[in-house]
Image 1 (cartoon, rainbow, N blue to C red):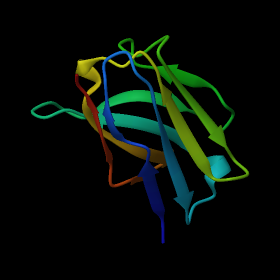
Image 2 (cartoon, rainbow, N blue to C red):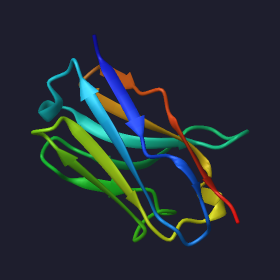
Image 3 (tube, rainbow, N blue to C red):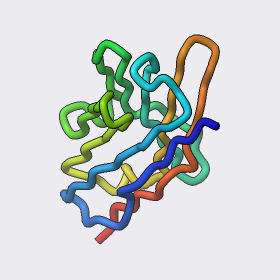
Image 4 (tube, helix red, strand yellow):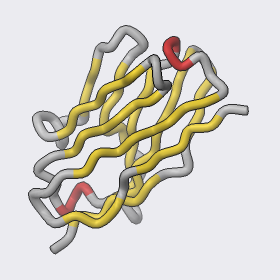
Length: 115
């Protein structure tokens, strides 16, 4: 049974930081490309950051220079370090795992940036 479990969301003031973590089980983690997506109310889900099995990364333009994605294949975990948070970063953040035609999603974790 595949499980992606996100943690680390919460309420933070503008300019603050949060670190999201995703623990994966039931998959050959090291083979999967891992990603973080987000969905704000009334908006479509969008890619935030992605890291391939070889460690290559790409980011949405809106988060470049502020967010960093990383993975630990020994622990089957992928993290998203979010700095200089803005109110427009408020959304539910989802962990995603992709390998060829196989895609898995976590249940999501809420991030709210507000003063």
